[in-house]
Image (cartoon, rainbow, N blue to C red):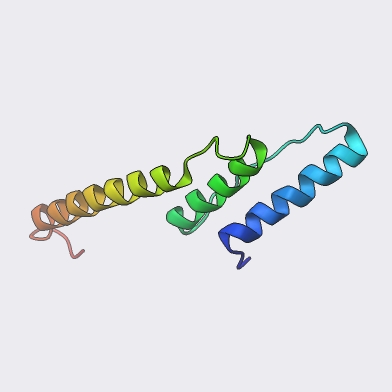
Length: 90
């Protein structure tokens, strides 16, 4: 599926609306893994935002933290590759 973050938020709106109409607001959501962790995180945040009070989730703070963590992870992976490259093709 090629949906934007907002697209996932809109799907959540539709599911929540139907759950109110059909089953008293009871809703079950399942998070399926993805092939693009950053996009998965942003989409999940949009859905969580729809489930909470407006402004309860600071998506921008999550995005900044994600960027910082991703930079650290990339640096660690590069360092590990440097140590392992004499022994394996990476």
